[in-house]
Length: 474
Image (cartoon, rainbow, N blue to C red; front, top):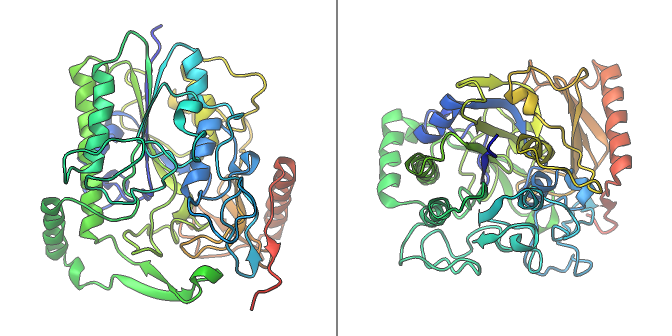
């Protein structure tokens, strides 16, 4: 059987409801909707962390961020609270962030390394954000690196010159999302006889929120026609709990109505369409698996709060569903039932074993991944194993968006969050209460105790680092 090509499309900061096929009435995503129509849509897919770098590391290695030791986004600026050259910024509030490394170690195995050894061409295009040199994609199993560096966002904006160290500038004013697609389609057009793994990680829709004027005008008019320009857009909340933002208040977006953000998603969707068209033109559609997902929840409470994740609570940087639940769409012609839906919870570490099993790629014996292959779900099964497994999160940090240090577990319909500032827990039944509005920790004490014990056992097992008490907190 011919080895399938794999295209892994990872969008930055795309929220669970930021696609029309996931329920957005303001954003328009016909090409991504087509992926859903021709593939499988997951309703309970999760990022391994509510911020980007740890999710990216988890996805590539099949390990939880706590196991890798990379539990927060990597801050490229030297800060006072950096304890060593191998650690990144540690925020302070009532607690001091747990230490974490500022790169993906070269000793970690990756999907790219495995696939390259199995005869694949391996290409990375777009954002990386997993450390400075020598931790770039080319040292983690990729033959080609276009645009991947230590940057977490396009510092100089989305319009050329963007001055990304590993990407030449395009024509003046050219849009970055378009340019990355140009590079990706060139790779597909010029492929050799090998199957390929295209790791297409767009910088969109991360801040700065910048979009093409003509598309922005379209969404300004759509906002007016829908009457959204007359609806309350934001709600100011509490002050930030971390010291470096203590004078600012959390600003929660209540509706999806930002024309520039909608235009960014629109451009992104157009470029997904270009990828699909290129595959069709060069006869690669039938033998290509496309995986489309995001690295954390939509930005809804800070930094301009450009989107809203409702009915999910909060957004990027939080342990609630809005920070970790993601869109996930997979198209595999002839193998996945078109227009199907999967409700089984999936998380970032699951991609490593799944992609390796799909491609019949041998596992590295010394690499102990923590994910579970969800290939049976793609084949139509409705569960993974006989027992419902636990899915875990460990984010012992103050999110720049307002969240506080915490850890969490979901098993079945129940999700428990443990907040480290005071060690209180909250328990939710996500089947009945997707918005996490009703804390059941007192009413369902047995379930609370069981899940908290399982979470604590897991944290001990993986050596999860905990935040420290801040002796100087006022």
